[in-house]
Image (cartoon, rainbow, N blue to C red; front, side, top):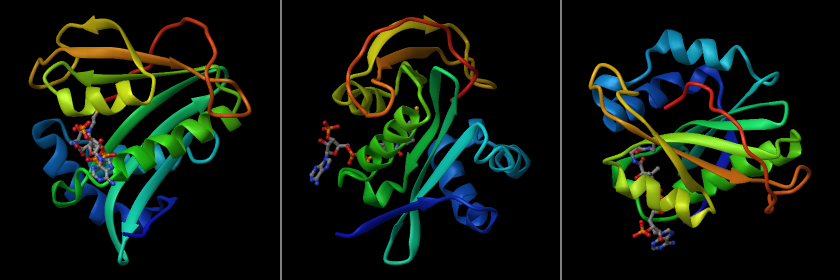
Length: 167
Ligand SMILES: CC(C)(COP(=O)(O)OP(=O)(O)OC[C@H]1O[C@@H](n2cnc3c(N)ncnc32)[C@H](O)[C@@H]1OP(=O)(O)O)[C@@H](O)C(=O)NCCC(=O)NCCS
């Protein structure tokens, strides 16, 4: 399998929105929200798509400005789960966060999303708390996870901090 990662542009939005709805249902971001995110590239955002045989099969986004990064979103088409695409996207975000000088990266994930939590745990994220009723409109709780980075490379380090709003 050859998956190519490249920066997301507005031309990808139709494909991304389809994946977004499949992955997040009523919590899906709108086109306007996604355009607002892409408008902040490259200053504070970094969005990638994963392409397989010319088709967008996954995407991910990072807020990376200053010492703290946040994984804003990550999704892969159901048909292509379990092939390392989610891991590849996450690793690329972490490498970019390190390049941008982030010393730590945070994320939020639904408490019932065990698959995603396992993916993050395999990439050295640890659970640091729970945010009650974080997801709307469902009211589902979020696990907050964090990993340290060595700015300049995707390695280990140590620090503490707060979180930005994200998925
Ligand atoms: C969470 C999500 C992004 C993971 O994507 P993915 O592409 O399936 O992730 P990976 O393939 O990298 O890893 C998932 C599993 O596949 C396994 N895997 C990875 N590469 C593999 C390969 N080459 N061959 C076989 N298995 C592999 C991993 O070990 C892992 O298995 P495990 O969960 O049993 O430990 C995907 O399930 C998804 O889009 N979910 C819906 C949206 C979502 O929940 N996003 C997170 C929001 S916070």
